[in-house]
Amino acid sequence: MEEQERINAIQKKIGYIEKRDDITNEIPLTTSISNIGLSEKVSNNLIRCGVRNLEELLSIDYEKLKFVRGLGRAGRNEILMCVHRLGYKLPNENLAIDYQSIERKTQGKILLEDLGLSGMARKALNRAGIYTMDDLENNIDKLDKIPNFGYRKKAIVETWLSDLNREKIGEEKDKLNQKTKNDELQQENNAIKQRIKEKRNLLEQYRMLIAEREQLLQQEQELDRELDQLRGEQHATTSKLTKTKNPGQ
Image (cartoon, rainbow, N blue to C red):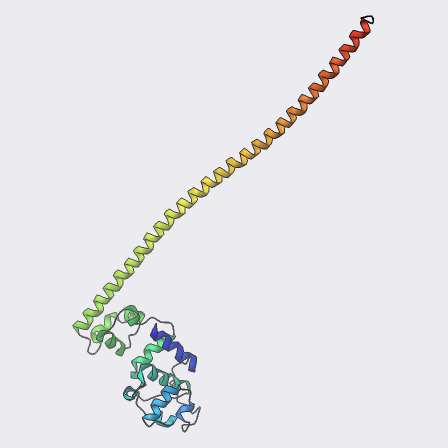
């Protein structure tokens, strides 16, 4: 994370650059070291060791930058990226492992150290141009031909690959277990949804039956009133006929 932050800081300051094989004169060689796009800290470190302009900087072997006090790996990478951006190269820069690593970082590639490989074995692979897992897979049958890459370093890499594969298998197993748990949870959710649906249907049927009951009761009351009215009319008619047949009573 700290390495990525340093990379982002360098990119923000001088922008993303690509490696240049051509040498051009985009700015004068007499340009002050403070005016070529380097950070103030890096410029001051170079000035303290006697590097005052671009020409003097370009005469320094890249490997000798490691001996500049206070510069550090991030500073060396910043210098290398800056001179490339200006169209120049440093002597022996093709041997610069740091730059090759940071260049791949800026391309979004995962380095061997990011995957857990550290120490002399990784450095030997880096010197052979192997920085990423893709590089290693493409050169896995050429490890014996790498200078200073003996049995011990090869054993370290093989053990690391084995651990990496076990970790990958473990991740796949975790994913499978999680998928199983997700499937079980989904089944439970589907069962709950089905129960909710059934209860909603029952509730809707209940509401419909209640509404139907209210309507039937209302109809029954209306019929009762009509029957009561009809009985009352019949009783009145009967009483009137009785009085007509017996006028003296």
